[in-house]
Image (tube, rainbow, N blue to C red):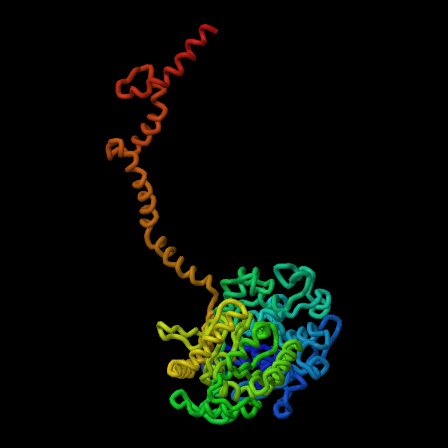
Length: 574
């Protein structure tokens, strides 16, 4: 049985700030069902609900060296839904009123986490075959493992996988600070190792030292090898392209199931879509939108940031509202976009509603009640919202990038293929025209619209396929090293040499036979192939020597002695 340890900074249901938590929470149970002994290690944040903390058991405690500091580290464990979860406890680093990025010591917090994970392994009775690290917060684990731990017998057979969920977040800090924290020498901070444009880069550390690099969709794996999407690491990714693969994320199909979702107004299936109309009416009432069954309702559940393409919406929002649509927005983020949607809500009352919060129940109701789901991202490593919306029969309008390109196929009126509507260029009017196209089909082609709804709901968005790809990756990394394969091919050759010497002589005569026909071509006897070689060599020099003899068979040699004869005549005159 393959043993795998997931190391990540967040995971549902314990703590969540983004899609990373969904992946780390959903993938391990599926791998466990496939026979992989998978466990997960996380920081023990203060924000983890008490209902989980009360069930944890203390396993061990020890000290972690961070430069001149020696910090307490406790390991707590929890058995939850058939899996073993480990939590790294240090109240100074993790018992704070936030998860990321407000204390200015992120390099120390997650440097501590990375070293604590490696130091804890011999003490908790778990020796994984694979260290599967997620995003920059665990990026130093592969680096520390290869640099400082791999020579030890306990760690020598471990392999590492680095998964990039979003290349934009890299964990970039000062070199001196990271050196002081982790005890890494100057020789390691070069452009081919940990240094990145004069800084230390946690994500790059994982990418350089991991045995395999994965991303969360095949298209994103290709995109990040280009300068446009590569975030200044495209050169490294091109260099390691042979160890880079994209595995499309899945969703928890049990949690997001319109047939059994207790958070929505009415359940429904692909065969019976009546409940979706009730969900739309309930969502309009909840958000204060005008009750209008025929008005196209566009939903958005997103982080309010430039990555999500909200600047495109800002450019053409009045033109979008002129189409007679309603817009429901849920999310938190940059003040620029919260201000934009707050202004728009007052500008179009009853037609646009925005809620600036993290509300999972409302998110479910938007997925179920909306007719369309808008995702005009500038880049999207994978994206889960488009798969969730398809699961609920809400057709996505998306830009063709990353995971959106891998999951949303624009409707083709000639072949009938497609499960949504897409545009390629990052352009506000391209997005506007795609929304117009979707609204036209919604109003004028209801049969085609319902056909696409059923097609989207019938899609397989589970983790089964993705888990199979990860399992195959683990198998490949844990099998005997590849150099053994050529040894097996060489073995028969050695046996042939020992069994009979005829194999070697057979090669030498074969080489002679290839040269012989060229010599015999002049008419030489077959019995004297060697003699044929010598005359051939002499014939090249012979014309100059035999010219005085006047051989009739070689009249062409006469011009050469003519050149030499003047030289001989010139000697007596001298």
